[in-house]
Every structure is written in C-alpha cells, then in structure tokens.
Length: 111
Image (cartoon, rainbow, N blue to C red):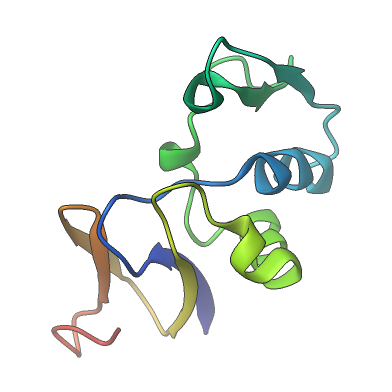
C-alpha cells in the first residue's frame, strides 16, 4: 500500500512555505527563502533542486507524505487543501480546475 498526497478543493495543488521548507529538510537539503515582491512569488529553493516547482513533486514521495501528515492543514498552499489517499498498485491523479481525484485501475474514483 502507498500513500498519495492530492488536492481536495478547486484552485490547485500547492505547498505552503512551511511545507516547502520541511520537505527540503526531510530530503536532507538546506533550503533558503527566495523572497519576491509579493507573497505569491516567495518560495523556498535549494542548490540540490534548482528547478523545484511544488506541483511537480512525486505525490507518493515519503518526504512529502510525512510533511503533510506533520503539518496538517498548514501544509496546504494558498489555493489548496491537501489530503492523503491510500492506494494499492498504480494510480493516477485526475484534475478539474485544481480539484483532484485519485484513480486506480480497480476503482474509477476512490477519493
């Protein structure tokens, strides 16, 4: 069985600043804050992942799952409400206007 992080509201998957920082630290990296002029262009970065974009994270990554479990609602970005699904075998995440569902070959929509 595998745990998968997905977004349960319209808007789109995203990690809060606290979640970005914790995610990098759980991977063993030292993140630094890149402050933009506005809140939406402020994010954490690290030398080991120079092209990091939170929407590209493997959703079943143990560091991501642990971060969401530890931070709870505080892991979600501005337009997200992150949850964790438990799946067996392969899965895919379908999305409509940012609202995601986790699908497996055995169940059309399980979450």
